[in-house]
Image 1: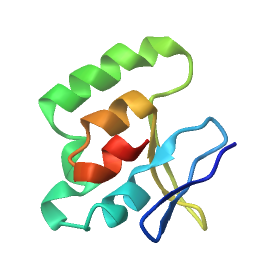
Image 2 (image 1 turned 30 degrees about the vertical axis):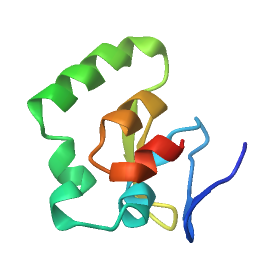
Image 3 (image 1 turned 90 degrees about the vertical axis):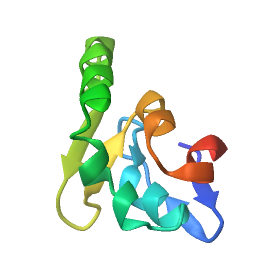
Length: 89
């Protein structure tokens, strides 16, 4: 798997290739209003997630522990409010 770094922030990926939204949020400046937890409850985001669920792997997942965070497929990353960070993938 190719590693991705934006600025000084390393963007983790899970075993399915989903990107860590927490890392992208940090790379984009970390504004509270752009947190993944707020974005995932948006109606449009929920509709996109439902559409992507037919693609095989779950499009978004939360993991706990040492490598915890919210991980999403590329199509969802493009939809996040992470500013310039999302365009670097």
